[in-house]
Image (cartoon, rainbow, N blue to C red; front, side, top):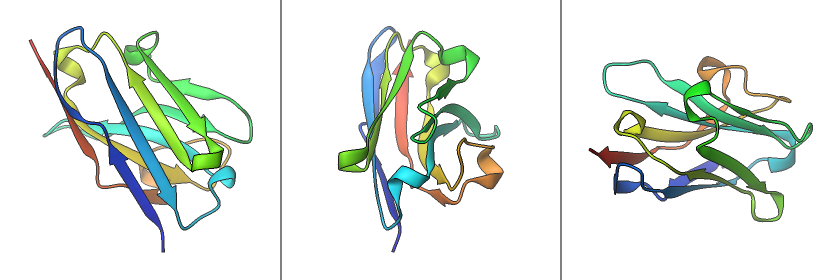
Length: 123
């Protein structure tokens, strides 16, 4: 049975930092691209970052480049999203998802999803 569990969300002030974790089980972690997505109520889910174990490449959405860093620990089946210099517009539910591919091709194509963790950045 597949499990994807996110943690680390919370309330932080503008300029603060949070570290999200995503631990997976039930599938071969090394064979999947793992992505972080976020959704603001009333808006579409958007990609934040994606990491491919196969290629070693990490993608970042433009608005988070230089502020967010994604890392992957294959030994622990865990990915992390270090979020620095947080802004109110980063407020969203953050989801971790996996796709059996070399890269994350979009929210509609991910194979497995976590339940999400809420990040709230106060101004």
